[in-house]
Amino acid sequence: MATGGCSGVLPENNTGSSDESSEVMVENRTTSEAEIAVRVIGSEDETLFSHVFVLGAEKMTSRGAIEATPTRVYVFTEAGVSHMWRYDPNLPVEFDCEPKDIGLTLHPDNTIEPWYDC
Image 1 (tube, helix red, strand yellow):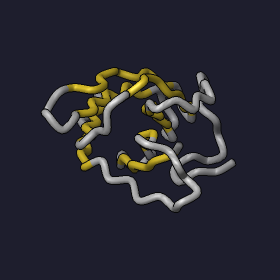
Image 2 (cartoon, one colour):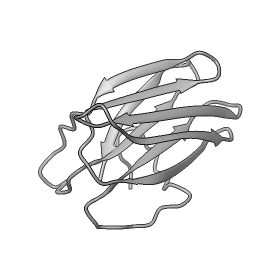
Image 3 (cartoon, one colour):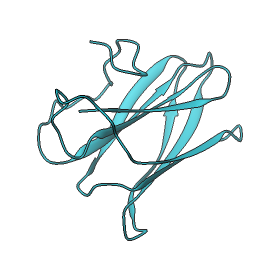
Image 4 (cartoon, helix red, strand yellow):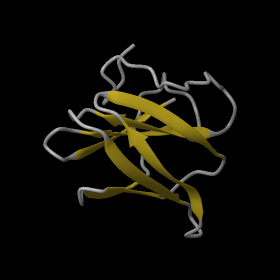
């Protein structure tokens, strides 16, 4: 199974849950350990999710159970890399879930790629 941003790797603690919540999936494609802070904001500017992931090189994990539909996602690393985007999944019809899981990949060139999944 390959999903945009996922190199065929399943998250370490994938629950396979089909309830009405979403997770945050983080992938570190760099060659060293990385701390990646993720904050997900809702429509009333409330924090729906906030966590600092510590991932080894080439590792991926997921966490959280976001019950509401997010509006913005903020990501920061200890190396000063940051990225913000509006939650706006544009997935094909076969991805029939709401809200969508939020994914992000930290690449070796210090860019952060956002993606979505079910």
